[in-house]
Length: 283
Image (cartoon, rainbow, N blue to C red; front, side, top):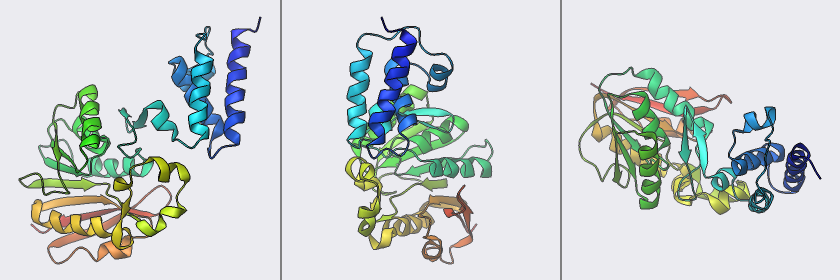
């Protein structure tokens, strides 16, 4: 009879081999993540201390998930969750899968402001990863999470409930139009990929992630331009606007800030690209 350890090793090898012929850019990691999910284990703990028992149903469940990944479905939609900052968020095809660049956006906001009472708006909240993380890290903040998609808001509300983010409220809104009041901080990871560039993206992104969260007209700049204009009218004097942008959009985005703004700067991501626009409204 095959030992549990041999069965475990064989399943991992089978998964990696299957995904090597797929669009996966990390077949070994993907196989590990899927098997850990099926077994209900932490991936690293599973590798260091292999399971002593594998349920009878686990191999079939694992192979069905492998087939989905092989067909191009994103790994985190299959698993149904994605780590972000210090938390784990539920994700599904109604929301964008959180990226490392967006973690850098959140860290930039947290670094700029200590824990003092602020009114914050997250525009295009998706899974809620920005708004909820800010709310959890800054208990004195009042965070409004906005999205035009009701399905995205359902996911964000579930994440807020699961993570007990009681200082985050959710509103269906096209940019800032659906919520009143002024804000100390407005933050956004808006759609900024040019619709004409859709054919250059990986198939798993094109087929599975929500186009509404990815693409914008006017070379990908339309939403950023509109949001910058609305933010100038909705920020309190001295308020700050943070916006994730495309790696090559700095020069164009810089032109969206007129005399109403007193400071405009751009932060680089880990790859050295200007990824975050930071603008301060005149006091």
